[in-house]
Amino acid sequence: MTVIIDPTSVRDLAAMNDEMGVLTVYATADPRDKSASPAWRLAVGNAIGALRSGAADDGDRERRAAVLDRLDRLQPEIESVLDAGESGVGRALFAPVSRDEVHTLNVQMPLDDCAVLERRPYLRPLAGALTLGAPAGVLAVSHEGVRVIDLRFGVAREVTRLAFDLDTDDWRSMRGPASLAQSGSPSRGANQLDRFDRRVEDNLQRYLASVRPRLSAIADEHGWQSVAATGDRRLIDVVRKGLSTSPARRDVVLLDRVVESLSTNEIAALVRPELEEDRRRRCRVLAEQARDAARSGGPGTTGISDTLGAFRENRVAHLVLDGTRELRGQRTSDGRYYPHGERPPGESDAAMAEESDLGERMIEMGYTSGAAVTMLPPEAAGVLAEEDGVAALLRW
Image 1 (spheres, rainbow, N blue to C red):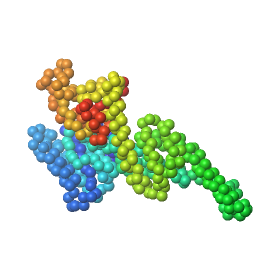
Image 2 (cartoon, helix red, strand yellow):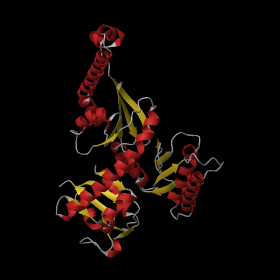
Image 3 (cartoon, helix red, strand yellow):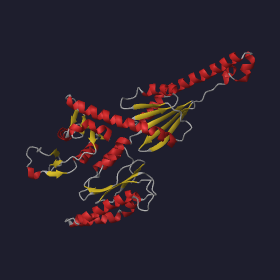
Image 4 (cartoon, rainbow, N blue to C red):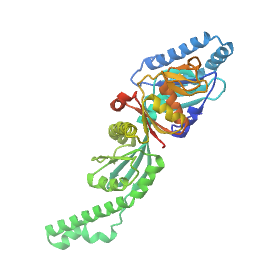
């Protein structure tokens, strides 16, 4: 089954659970590596080999046999993920050991090079892709109208064209050589042409103003967090005024450059740096909002302990996490997580199990509980440097 990256699909993946294990494979095909054995393919192959060796040493005979058999049967799917000729820069595979289902995805952005076998899928690279490859829109505005482009996870697709089609049949007296000849005056003819151009411009601006509600509806429908509007400054200002009334979660980036003649992919490449910078800025603002809310006693938390406590109460609306941090802790027999040094009432130290990756567990809890998850890029992670790299906005 091919996975389409969206909150619902990721929530379904996060809910996948197999006591025998779920195999997760990520690969990022580097198009610059033209060798017969690319480094990324070797890295993933070595990681899978390590999983096989670990399974062969497993003292649980039933699990050892199940994992080794499943790895053998998954070999064709694994080879497809590692095939340099396949489409997609980033590839992933998720497969429970105890069931025959296999989930794969391809995106045009980097993921990771790794193979993991745990009770649940490994989601950290996917969470990073959802943060930095989030859906965005491009509005290429020109005198021809508006080209509307959807850009998500490195893939650009033209959604529609809103064409400006002006009927000027009754404007004949304002243009052309005949007008100039009848006037008997070059200056009067030039004025006529100026009036014609101004009238076209006025009608174009009225048209752009009229399609603003439709553009906002398209942005809502496609879940765009950011919109880049390109074209002549006067024209994109008209479009921006409509989008600025959209929800505060959406940013509008203006690029004063006409790109109507470029291909969809060329337009996407032109605006991508601006949109990526906007996403990084949004991440920083979000981290600051969560931190400031926690400090002021509002609906926010910072740090491992308080954020885990909010998860236990199902209050987390948006988890904000520095993905480079190694967060360790412990868990109870019924699956509750705590930082080291914190033991819940009624639990003995002997009953607490070591948890080597609390960050991954929080990502799982975020997605399965319906919370949003943002993985902070390095440029924004410093906001939470004193808070263990963890914060959350709460439901209440």
